[in-house]
Amino acid sequence: MAVVPAAQLDSLAQGAGRYAPSPSGDLHLGNLRTALLAWLFARSSGRRFLMRIDDLDRVRPGAAERQLADLAAIGLDWDGPVVRQSERLPHYDAAIERLTAAGLTYECYCTRREIQQAATAPHGPMGAYPGICRTLGPEARARRRAEGRPAALRLRAAAADFEVVDDLHGRYRGPVDDVVLRRGDGTPAYNLAVVVDDAEQGVDQVVRGDDLLPSTPRQAYLASLLDLPIPRYAHVPLVLNENGQRLAKRDGAVTLADRRALGNTPDQVVSLLAGSLGYTASTPSQLLERFDPARLPREPWILAVDGLLQPSGCP
Ligand code: GLU
Image 1 (cartoon, protein in one colour):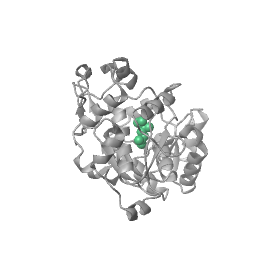
Image 2 (cartoon, helix red, strand yellow):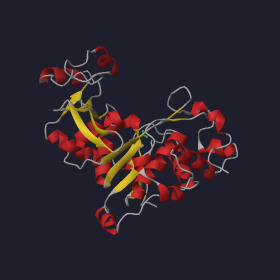
Image 3 (cartoon, rainbow, N blue to C red):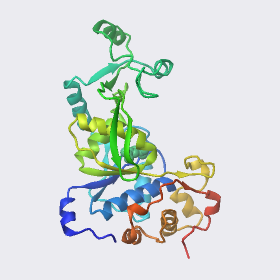
Image 4 (tube, rainbow, N blue to C red):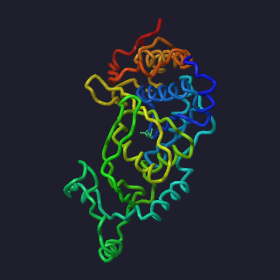
């Protein structure tokens, strides 16, 4: 194992990494690989490893339990109880209230279609909210409110972009716009919840799929407005199918249950994941002994699911 000197362990005693799946279905090999990497980054740096279920939306009954069972089956462990976002609503409310008290929010009555039809703000980043409701006067606002459309709450962003530092991508500057903080149906938005949770859980290392890199400047900017610490990031490459698309259930036997049905053991699945990272190992602990973040592949893992019947890296 990459040994962490005692002094460094002390200094990191409060630090933590985490894995935070959305319980929308079973985890596939790409998700399991990202979870394994998040665990390796945390454990190899002496951090705690936390598990959080991001269940504010996209919830499929029973999925969270199956996800946790699969993560445990491949040999991942975590510290403390599993945290569920649905049980933390007052924390998101408090953060939204702080932003509102600072004059940093406004109600937005736009439908998705109105936003799509409006031109992007003249100096705003592509796809950013064009600011239609940002400058409504009190009368127009009262009129829109009276129309009865449920308002979302948006951030009144004062920056156009923000820079984060990523262990794999280096300095990354990306757009910041008037992100939704609370949706029209009252649900706190993911970008807000993730910032509040990571800070309150003491997460100082966020390892996740690089599809989330473009959202990261928004999240870090929100953290800065809330006076919360900005974590260290490592956005890891995704797993793609042979056509270069993000791996999905329709690609074949991609979940642990699928692999088991084909006769693979969890160790064989870990071997496959380890092989994709350039290691020969069949348990996370074996992998931890050799793990070196600097050696990580920077390219997506292209997975030919049909060729998976005999996992590579197994005797
Ligand atoms: N729950 C998010 C997802 O599964 C990930 C959140 C995060 O890692 O920040 O896509």
